[in-house]
Length: 71
Image (tube, rainbow, N blue to C red; front, side, top):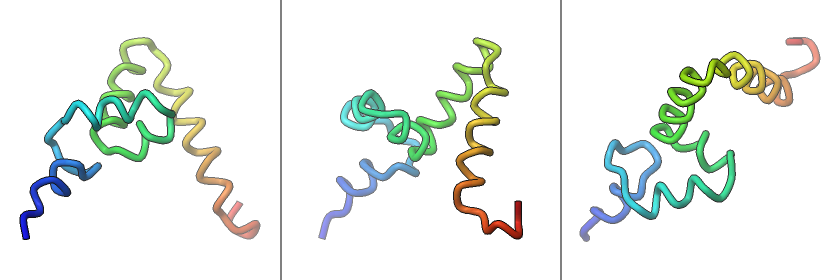
């Protein structure tokens, strides 16, 4: 079987496709779950001096899944 389609569509691959980039426009979740999308978004935020806001938001999101004893 040819797995090229799945490898190119994978969120962890370095190959960018039009479909993959369009998927980022659907939601922030689509951007941050894609490693390349997250990398590009963080680079954009660094240029806008807003990277700390994203880091804070990600830390808050991580707290949602912590046990109370870990907080």
